[in-house]
Image (tube, rainbow, N blue to C red; front, side, top):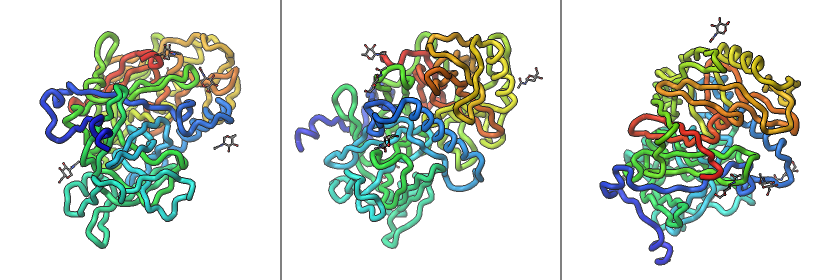
Length: 429
Ligand SMILES: *[C@@H]1O[C@H](CO)[C@@H](O)[C@H](O)[C@H]1NC(C)=O
Ligand SMILES: *[C@@H]1O[C@H](CO)[C@@H](O)[C@H](O)[C@H]1NC(C)=O
Ligand SMILES: *[C@@H]1O[C@H](CO)[C@@H](O)[C@H](O)[C@H]1NC(C)=O
Ligand SMILES: *[C@@H]1O[C@H](CO)[C@@H](O)[C@H](O)[C@H]1NC(C)=O
Ligand SMILES: *[C@@H]1O[C@H](CO)[C@@H](O)[C@H](O)[C@H]1NC(C)=O
């Protein structure tokens, strides 16, 4: 035990001033669920089967906007990327979805009477010496931003649900969260507020235990790390199918995105409770070659921004009018033969077996900076000989998905309310 502790670097509330300046940093692996290293990887499934599944999950996730958005949080977490974290003392390792669209850390907990028997291992709070329930009177009870209630012993409880059917109900508690870092020295965050779920249904299956929220709500991992990492994190997503190398999630000084090619844009916070923890960016227009198409705003988010950036959504959703002109311009300029779509909701598909096909220059004009998209940000290969445009037109809810973000170092700075993009070859970072 002593050995374990001597290897763990504890970050306490009394961090040094160097750390407070973001002088301290670490990185952890962030694995796409369809990569061989992921616990969800199913080797007997075909690559295209996995892609179709990812698209289906993306569609079910985005349907949040078709429902009454004034209701409880139901924004789905299909589980595109997972990280390993440990909970409690001694540290108990779990695999959890890392999600910029979630704002709490929760895991399945023992006892879980309705869980399937094969869900093992599961965090057992009675075995953790640092686990403490939170009384309803504590400020830690209300920070979760979730529907909270009180048990008969006046202890804090939570309940959260997602569109894809995932939901979790249980105790709000504080315990140590430990993350293994690529430097080999695990990093521990004592007294982190977590949800310990005793009643769960998870669309992401039995091999993943919960969700690590990377949103900017008060109970998200990033906000709770606060002073230690200066509110900074970044990731670089490796495109699926090109290499098996891992993506990384970086914190603190490791998460600074600057230098040649880096652009920065402000993020906004929605006035609607339901969307408060999301990162809302502002896209002013999109260009294809020399044609520039304005982006319409959405009233739904009640803020200056118009598009949510999300690590867990696969496709990118843009305003219907912009999409009509954008896809039309692409289809005029691309030098490939159109083909019928093998996937019902993707409308612009082309025949090609090579990965060197040429695409017209496409730019996303964010407020404060332009981001040029590459082939792998625009198209997704859905069959051996077919690629489809990975953009979809929508009426009211716009989302910047993870295909558009691959091969960019994407940095979030909560203190400065900014998101930065830097073109990078993520597989070699
Ligand atoms: C893996 O995929 C195959 C083919 O789709 C399926 O029959 C099997 O049930 C899957 N295995 C798991 C563990 O999900
Ligand atoms: C939770 O409560 C503890 C003790 O009262 C306090 O030190 C800590 O800052 C609180 N955590 C959060 C995230 O508010
Ligand atoms: C990635 O790993 C899978 C399974 O181990 C293998 O089939 C595939 O060829 C690898 N892909 C690349 C690009 O190395
Ligand atoms: C789309 O193109 C039409 C016709 O060229 C134009 O009238 C309209 O303003 C364009 N819409 C946007 C959003 O750029
Ligand atoms: C995977 O990572 C290794 C080690 O960093 C690197 O040498 C290799 O080029 C990467 N593979 C790809 C396909 O980029």
